[in-house]
Image (tube, rainbow, N blue to C red; front, side, top):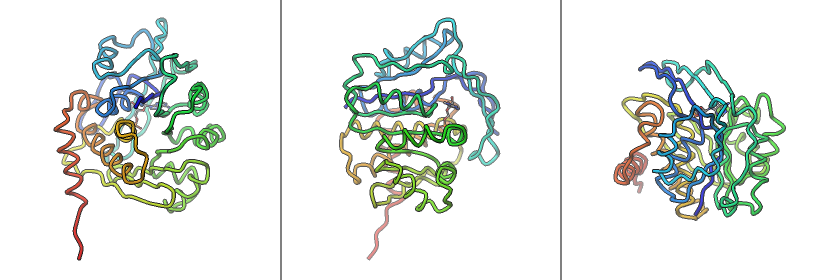
Length: 305
Ligand code: AMP
């Protein structure tokens, strides 16, 4: 099934206790689409970049079967830039700089050839633009998923609640779930988010895994305990890309299949953090992914009499 991803395509500058990068290609849509490309062949992207964006990366997208007809290039503009520094625990980070550049005046448009999109991933960006993208699709996709961040809960809460009411699935981290609902208990927070509209919710807990809520059922997905985490940037997006990519591949929205999808998402995220930026998710093999998924199976399965 076809998957359309919308969100930021960016330059990132990252500092972690292990090192520092100059401008490297990042952005929510970049991580999501690359990750999903390991599962579905019909990948599309709606985003904006400036004339400074490397052609080589656009070719990389094409090599991953990501159609970029919806990637607008504003020749005289500069690509969105984000810079962050991770704390020693690698779970929390400070944003050092955000330069919206061409993202500031981004007005998403949907190429005609994308109108038959079945799965839609609204990556992290201004909630009103997420809503606009959904409204531009004449046939509502079968499954719409949304990611967001604390910034939009702070400054665009009404718009965020509006788009949340229109999607099937939301993915947020534990801190954002608490911020959005005012509930400390994640079960209560989950109930409140789902009362806003979505029938499925994923609450990410960083290195402590993720919780999948669907209707009245819950599933816990672990994160793989890795010896070295190099750079967590994009882990949440890579996770989302693996999850929705697997759903688009299998086209099965049952709870049992979503459990598998969330394990694939978590496996993809575990690769992402092993190197800086997108480096580790550029050249994965099917065998590597399958072996990693088996590690999850072994990690969490047990027998009981
Ligand atoms: P994650 O680590 O999964 O939260 O995502 C990191 C990515 O989000 C980076 O590659 C950034 O370019 C992108 N990003 C950071 N801030 C924003 C923002 N305000 N809007 C859209 N994308 C952002």
